[in-house]
Length: 222
Image 1 (cartoon, rainbow, N blue to C red):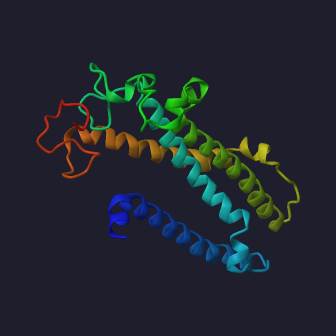
Image 2 (cartoon, rainbow, N blue to C red; image 1 turned 135 degrees about the horizontal axis):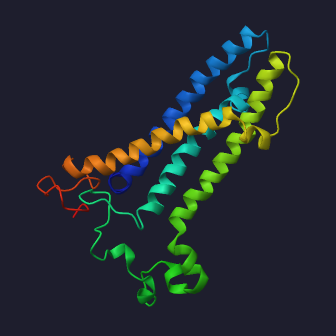
Image 3 (cartoon, helix red, strand yellow; image 1 turned 90 degrees about the vertical axis):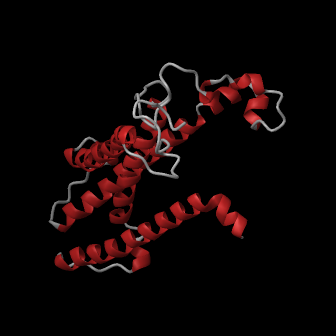
């Protein structure tokens, strides 16, 4: 167990934090939802019923969408864009291990299966990380539109407006894009901050930082 925790501590802590905060979101969201239901003379929902509401899933998908467009963009852009002095960038004038052709390792027994398989499987695998984040973003984007339209229609019905917006119509609304863009801007600000601040600031022991004694102009984390 100790070895498991040592070797997987980062993912265990991060997934645990995700579940804790998602649970907290659902808990306070449930109370907020029922307060709004009381205000409009509507029946209140149990906690389990709330977890199936558009209110819960719209808030969830809206945030997942912003996180995954950020991480997809970051993984993709760092393939060919550079920032001199940043711990988060490749060196602009030197070849990096991540750029080497995996086909030279096809005969290595411990190489991942797609590398040994080659062909289109390897081609897909070469970009599988960014593709995975892109797919999750698109799913979250669609879920945001579906749940958001259902939440919007429920709000309109509570105010006596029986008009209905489809998910596609909702995705074209200013409300949808306000929900999206207010999150996207903060995500890109955060990622820009670590790129730029890692030029001048250090965190001893973190792989996201350059060594404390590294010069500011040194690119990469060494």
